[in-house]
Length: 264
Image 1: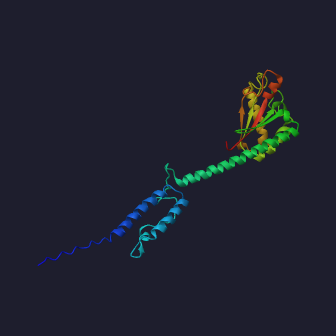
Image 2 (image 1 turned 180 degrees about the vertical axis):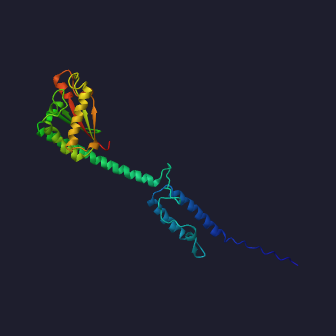
Image 3 (image 1 turned 90 degrees about the vertical axis):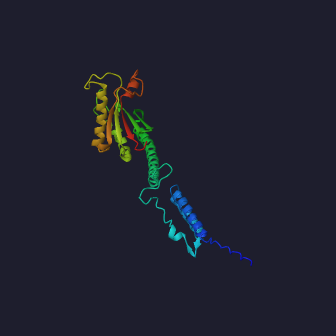
């Protein structure tokens, strides 16, 4: 008798399909987790839409594996622990965004302040020229703020720190511009190199006294808030002109009002 050939058993490979789907899902999960740490919210939404379309077709027995396994949800920029998403440099993404917004706001504020300083400088020059004080004053816009130089002969008598009667026509003209800008103000006093032998023991004391006299006037007349003003004294240092001539020494005997920039 012939032997019957043994019937070969058929190996069921149906398990390979869900296994492959599961591997695909795990791979996609790691890709999305990696992407969430590197992209912004807009790019994340694009990832979500694309993977949703791809996984919609992965079904076993009519049910999608995506629903119970992974829910992308809405990207909030935070991890489960509440920490901000980290970028390549380890910086907090939300914190970085806040810093960028603050930097933009600061840049805008600085631009506005610069425009106000330029406008104030031009208006002040015109006002001083109209009052025939152009030769005794100098208005300069520098990196730290608006510098207003007043020769001492329109403010003080020689060797004195008492404000002269002409103060109304000089500080009075400057006052509206100081009030409009409402910035920190510094008043600096200077002298020439002639030794002081009068009421004050040195040119340092004389320059300080003159700066204080101008400061007191600005505060008393409520032109500048007392908490926003300070004084400096330089004596014969930092001259504007030569001390070898009377004209030069007159230029060096001066008071400088500096309207400080908030953004430098």
